[in-house]
Image (cartoon, rainbow, N blue to C red; front, side):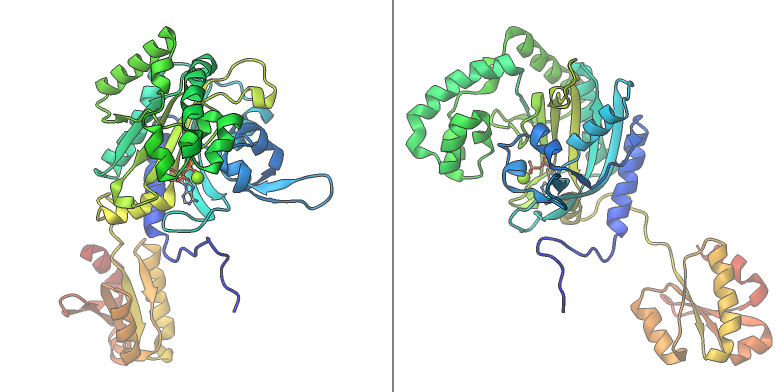
Length: 414
Ligand code: ATP
Ligand code: MG
């Protein structure tokens, strides 16, 4: 038998997923973000140029292919580059352009709990904003979504400030001295990155490297007075908005395009893959040969990890309880016309209704197994009398109801 591709999953009940998605849709729409969709299939060059060739994503996790000798395509690994491409391609002039999108991403990683080769992200971008107040608003909107909409408590927001190119150049000098002194203690990947793309060393998952880097020079100690003032302002505004967070001086995030603020939401309830949302400020104008700067802020929520977290936290979000379900059970096939009409009537009035076949005995079993709340029993005698019997599957009580008022009676039960 052909099985699913390694690292992918069949989601056989999307109820929680859909509920979270709907809540996110409502929360961010109400903050004046517009729902957009970009293709899953993109040119490989898009990500090489914007995400950066040295990153894990582009360097080793891309699904790429070619259908002829000229063009290289890929399955998108993230959404920001595509959103920016769409912004420029449609020549959008709105600033900020506040959008969200949602859908599958593809990365060839080692599958494990919370890490898939196909996974879903809920992605938010505010393109063309240049204000610390907007950054604070953005982070607090996310925090409100997790805390107030989903009722999550057990998570931490880590924030860091990467400054601008000049700040990072100053930091790089100090970092180089540090790394030269410790070159023999770091892993081979970090040794390569120490020369090719130094800041990326902080992304390393190796514990020995991470332990060493806690002693490395901090970016926030090398900010210019202007950048430092912005970093302080951000902290002040996040305090005003009561956004609890910690400063993680080692946080750089896995993409090359970030400037200034970066942040992650993580939870100890998730185990090793603890980050369920990450983002930051970026400017991709140059990657699209656009001359003017275009500071923007974005974030991606990993839907699978968020759902794992909700489950681990006991699903505290006000997800709509499954609607009480009616089951229509004709005792034999000759009663199907009457039973189908009863089903049609209930379903048309908006009640959640199932149709159960197989006769009385099997039908009862099926109704019990599938969580039917009220069973509408239709036998020969009921047909003759113009009634149905409605059985409450919890109490076991039965009520005889005229067929004509079945839908009114059913409504009254809810
Ligand atoms: P990680 O360090 O866990 O690899 P990342 O920095 O690569 O994360 P981002 O590119 O920032 O992740 O993506 C944002 C979010 O998408 C992550 O915080 C995570 O919740 C989710 N995510 C990323 N990769 C995967 C994956 N392979 N499977 C499931 N979720 C993922
Ligand atoms: Mg990753």
